Length: 438
Image (cartoon, rainbow, N blue to C red; front, side, top):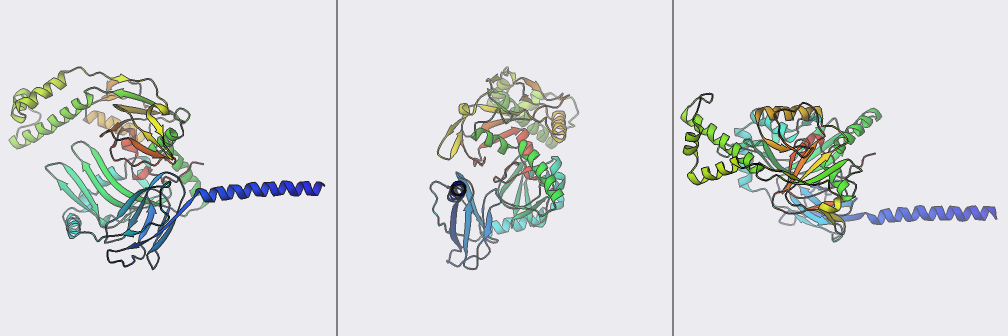
C-alpha cells in the first residue's frame, strides 16, 4: 500500500512537471520563412533577428530561417544582408503568421554614392570622437565599449543646419567588455544636432554574449544589474507590472509653461548672435548694444514675440506622485503609456553616477537653463553642490501614445527623454530586452 501511494505521488509530480514543460513550450512561438532577392533567388547567410535581443539566426543555403519567440507582445523582426536594404517588420505574437517571407532590394546607387563620398571626405579622425561620445556615451562603461570596425562609418556635416550625419556601409560590431556583449548594429539613421547638443538615431541591435570564465561572468552580471537598475527598460517593466513604487520610481506630471519656449528662444538668439558677430567680425567680449543687434537679426514680429515670452513669469505646476493606472492602460499583451504635458521620473534607489554629476556641472557652467528638479522646484543649474537621485523628463512630442510589452520593449520615435536617461541610454549601457536580472 505504501509503495502504491508513493507511485501515485510520483505520477502526480511527473504530471505537474510535464504540464509545466508543455505550458512553457506552447507559450513560445516558432516562426519560419525565406529570404530572397527581387528575382526570387535565395540570399544565403542573411541575418534574421529579433531587434534588441540575443535571438537571431542566419538563413541556410536555400534562404530559409527559423526563430523561436520568447515573449508575448509587440516586436520587430529584422533582416539584413550586405549590399541590400535592411528590412524590419513590426509584428505582434497574437496575430503573427507562422511563416514570414522577405524580399530584399539592393541598396540604391544614390545611397551608395552618399556612403562612399562621406567616407572619403570626412574621416574617422575628424568626427570619430564626437560620434563616439554621442553614440557610445560617457558613462564608466563607455571606457571599455568599442566599435571594432570604424572604417565602415562615413560622416557628412551640414554647416548651415549644424548637423552631423553618420552612415554605415555594413553592420557595426561593438564589443562591450564591461557588460560582456558583442553587438551587431545595423545603423539606419544618425543625426547629431551640434547647436542643441541633441542626438537622434535609429538602429537594429543583435546581442551575443562574450565567452568568459566564471569570474568574468560574475563581474558582467554585476555590471548588467547596475546598467539595468538605472535604465529606461527598468522603468517600462515596472510600469507594465504596476510596481513603480516597489521598484523605486516616483512619477509626477507637470506643466512647465513657457520654460521650454524660453530655452528655445535663448538658444536661438545666442546662435544668431554668434553668427552675426562672426560675419561682422566683431569681438564677442566687447560691450554691445544687444537691442540694436537684435533688431538687425530678427524681423519686428519675431522680436515682439520673443520679448513677450522672455519677460513672462515662468510657472511650474507639479502633480502628486502618480500610479501606473494614472498614465497607462492595459491591452491584450501590452500597456499603453499616455499622458499630457510632461512626466518627471525620479529613481530613488541609487544616487546619480559620478560621471553624470560631473556632466551636469559642466553643462551648468556652459549653458544657463531652467529645469524641473527632482523636488519639483524650478531652479538654476548653475550651482549643484550635492548629488541627486537621477531624474528624467518625458515628452510625447506628437502626442502619440507608447505601447510597451511585458519585457519593457517599446517602439516610439516620438518619445523624448530629457535629463538622466537622455545621457545614460547609450550603447555602453544597452541591454537586450531578453535580459533578466538574477
